[in-house]
Image (tube, rainbow, N blue to C red; front, side, top):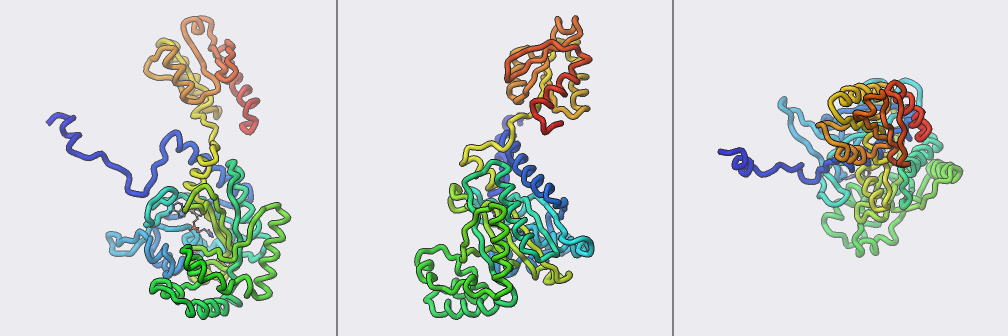
Length: 435
Ligand code: HAM
């Protein structure tokens, strides 16, 4: 069988359904978003934590809550070859808590501030902005129950989105109360729900997770729920004071928000402050990030009874939001400098120059395959380079390189020995953040 014939026999492979690839040039945007988010967290003193992509299944059952859709319907759970039940992480907070407890990180300076990023897995119905492998950048601030910390976390999420240039999003905020007022409110809500003609599934949900019913998007349900009691009207004095203080700090920080008393998050561990960032151009999958307090979670997982608050930002959705706003998060440059050698001798010199530029931290690439001037310059433009270094016979003879400024369309001959210093200075001047 010829190669061609055997090719035909196999269908080209595709990534699994709902699992996105990020390939160039979009992958540059992906990386820019992720880096901007993590940089924002590092600037606020959050330290990197790298966690396993799969954990024992019981972590999520105990941490996230068995009544949630995430745990009951969406987990990638399987037995490993030793017969242990493991699950691809559907979210990050439970794993962070597990790791903090395991490594006694909660015994040091508090709050413990951690940032993580990477893929998470949820068996959801794929559609635009809803993937089975999704990417998040998350932070957790553990061990201090201070409304100023709630405000910090929320303001940082806002700063993350602003740092990539996003504008068309808004912040919704509420409080879910705590152990002193939520149980009573829960019963009150259940009593109300029992008076309604609910379908079987909703009735069941009302019994195990009544707050989730408030989130029902069906118009007839919205109508029926118009008079439902709201947590915000049944807060204890301490919960109210905490929430008011968070709002005060957010006002001081100039972070705009609206109160949504019906805001419900899809994970069970939340207490007190809860928030979601929404981008209205994204249709049904409008949540670009969210989070809140989870004061009982660590104790629930067998650790100390410490408080915590954090967020998870959806990198995939932030990317889509950027696209709808027509904004680029990356500078579109693969490299700053691109070598264009013309002839074998020039190539030998250029290989060395490019290597030296890389050694001093400049980004540089060059044309390979002995291309002519036109083809090689095309390569320089495709790379988005700021400078092309052209070296032909004439330059070889005079020991120089023609440095072409590809944006100003100017050219200068620089001695081979001086080109490194010339470019370091030129690029520091153009992009001061490099210095
Ligand atoms: P979450 O709201 O489930 O929270 O997810 C955070 C963000 O991840 C969402 O706002 C959304 O942007 C993105 N996301 C979720 N599911 C998908 C999906 N199927 N496809 C694309 N993007 C998605 C958490 O995961 C919490 N662990 C956040 C947190 C940290 N709370 C406290 N600390």
